[in-house]
Image 1 (cartoon, rainbow over the protein chains, first blue to last red):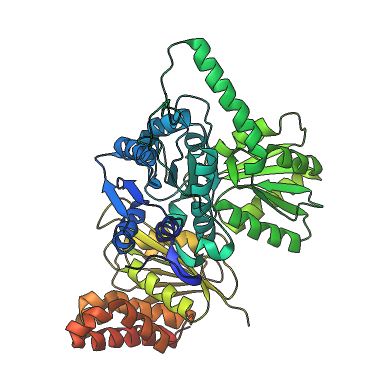
Image 2: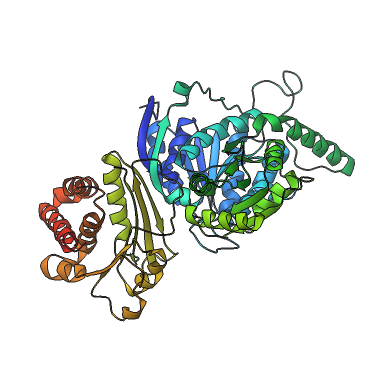
Length: 365
Length: 188
């Protein structure tokens, strides 16, 4: 049996769903728990095709509620488990992910955003930002990476496993239907060749020795009887989340040094914005782009500084203000005027961002 | 010379536009280009307009969707109506001349509007099932993103397992590709 799914580095031409399956294998995932939903189906399909070759497992559950909870259970049993979903499935998985949040179980969930609300379209949107960052009852203590294409999907799926196991907060890779279904080139690699050491999973329950004598008892609670008890637990968690946030936040800036119009976008839309910045610069308009990669925790301090330098801010997203909400909260107190370009459920092109910015610049003069 | 071609290919679900897009982008990637292909369709298994967005470039490609295509190919009445929004003054608009009642819906602002008898040729000279390969030949002639040999190699890669069982299919597919190519090559 072949043990390494990827030897060294390789160029490939793949869909995002295929990339995720390869990345999970490269990251040493043991099992996927899954339930089919478009546009995420092929993560399961590719995983099922690849898994037996590398002695990995798969369980198709009866629905997403069950996929989420079996994933939590698999991790507790010591497996590096993951799952993937989209849209209505993401809603159903929130219950298990809040359980993971409370019990500090390192789950990895890949989301391929589709249109919403409800069944909506099976194609694409950026409308699962609020749900993925803050879904479920509780405070949304979780880590969310927003990817922009095949390379990100590979890099951040691998990273998500280490982040989850290191910090023990549920970790999400937030892709979308475009990335899931599109084909483009990508470099896949064995994490070791890039000096990435994968954290080995360990069981949460059923450990060797006698509880209380040889080791602490394995006692993971998601129920608290007293409000004071819950207050203590959640406050401690909030404090810890705040402390680790600076280590976790990731973002990219393009041409922001001298920029007058700052364009904010995340995920796949960031690619259109980058193209627009180039086109606008060629026209003599000083545009720049800030792309948050972690949406939770959010690179608030860094964004605040960049926003302060600009004369105008434009938020571009394939949703009605789900990113904008986070941005406004993060830049509270900054007075740079902010406007938006929302295309819920629709892809955004370079040309329309350019057009929008040109209009905004006219208003500035 | 830098190359950057944007193609929107649309038809009814089941007509094979997605397979064509997949084969073309694969061929371009194998030829050393950056390629990006994204399918777009509704929840139906069959029927419903199915659009393939293809971009081929010698540098990294940005957003998966674009506003204006260099070439638009529409294979049904609904596809014609749906894709005129991707037409600009530089766009070549190709449609099957078998489509009825779209005279008033054809784009007015295209660089060229080109009806081709792809369905007729597939039905009369070849087999209806290679209709999409005729279209593939037309796309290649219109865009020159890959040459015919590279396209044949890509078809072989995708359908080789079928050709092994039925060698006559290879000839039929290659013939379809060449006929599609001929339909467009001298008309641009």
